[in-house]
Length: 430
Image (tube, rainbow, N blue to C red):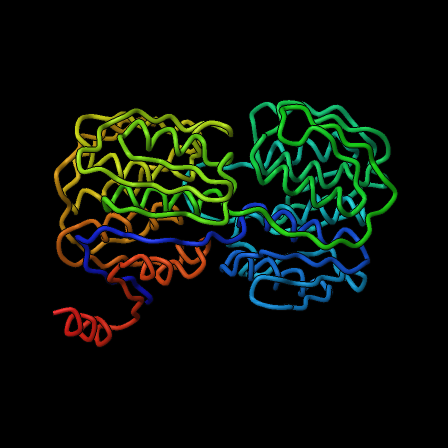
C-alpha cells in the first residue's frame, strides 16, 4: 500500500505552480458530453478523480483523446448509453453531475449514487428536487438514480440550503430546458462560475453565476468549445498553509488572488506576511504566529476544504483558537491523528478548541480523507523526526504530484509502497 514517508523540521521555501481546479473540472467534464461537437478542455489537473471521470465518459461511448497531460478532447456524438455505473465512478462524489448532463441532453439518465470522502452527510435531495421541478420523474433503485423526462420545462427553484453540487447539476439540466429557469439561494463558489462560463462558451445562456440568483434561458442545443479551467483555490490554499505550518516562505503562482481572500485574511490574522501579485501570492511565515478563530462557510466565506490545513497551522500557533465546522459534521476525524504528533485539540460537536504547542513529533498516521490527508503530510514536514502517512490514495484524488511539488520546496519526502523502500529512505537520510 502506498505511503508517504518524510523527515520534518525544515521550512518549505520557494515557488510552486498551481494546477487546474479539480472541482470545476469535474463539472466541466460532465457538461462536455452535452454537445455532439468537439470540446477541448485545457488546464485539466492530472488527478485520480479526473481520470475516473474521463474513463466513465469513455464507458458510455464518447470519444476521449488526451492531447497532453493537462488537455483533453471529448466528442460525445457517439454516446450510446445513459447508464453510468462502474466500481470506480461509485467512489467519487462528482458522479452525480452525469445526471444533470445526461438529463439535459437526452432527457434520461441512470447514474450510480455517489461516493467520495466520508466527511459527513452529503445527500443529493436538493439535486433531485431541482430535476423534479424541471419535469423529470426520479426513482432510486439498486444504488442508482434513474431520471426521465418527456421534456424539461423551466421552473423557479429555491435551494433550501446552499449546495455547490445541486447548483451545478440543476444549471446543466436547465441549460437545455424550455423557458427561463431561476435558481435562488444558489452557491457562489468560483468553480460554479467556471462551469457556467464553460456552458456559455458552448452556447448556453446563463446569467448571475457567482451570485445567489442564477437565471438560465434554455437553448435548443449546445456546440463545441475550447476552454481553460481556472486555477485550483484549494491546492493554492494548501501550499499557503504549508508556509505557515513549516515556518517557510512560499510563492504560490498561477492563481486568482481574489479567490484566496478568506484564506489570506486568516493567515494575516495569524501574523504571516501575505504579499499579493497579479497572479501569485507569497506567504512568509513568522516564528511567533498567533491564534485566531475560524468558521467554515459557503463562498466567499472560509472554505470547508481548507479547514484541516488551517487547523494544523493553528495547532502550532501561540494561544487558543476556535474552529467551527458549519458544513460537514465528520470533518474533524483527522484530529486523532494529529494527537499522535503532540497537538492539543479538543473537539466537541462541530467545534474544535486548538491550544497551540511549540513543536510536533513524527508519527505513523493514516489519512482519513483528501484534505485531511494533505494536512497530515504538512504536519509531518513540520514535525521533528520521521512521519509516515498511510492511505495516500485519498490525497491522490485531488493533488497532482503533491510530493514532487513539496520536494521542489525543499521537503524530504518520498512515496513508498514497501518496508524495503522505507529502509532505503532511512539509509539515504542518515
